[in-house]
Image (cartoon, rainbow, N blue to C red; front, side, top):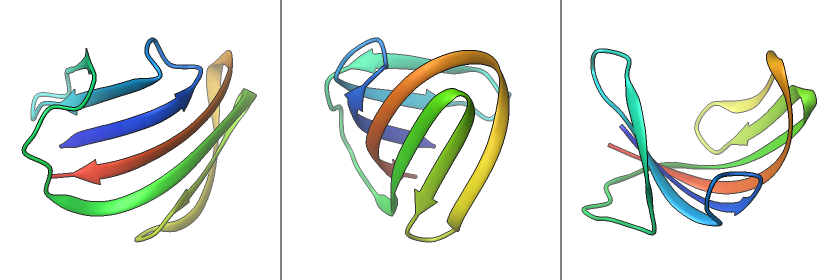
Length: 78
């Protein structure tokens, strides 16, 4: 699964994060195809609280162990 993200708080302003089947993941700078659209989301990370508004899954709120500040618009791709 690929996540194409544009926003503030990640390593790069535009990046792709790829999750592999074994649970590991890696990120790359820029946009690398192919992109097979699955959903679009807005992620707001304020300290330990993350709020995600996803076009397929709706509104989600979760807690994380680390503090961070992020505002990211993303596309989930297969």
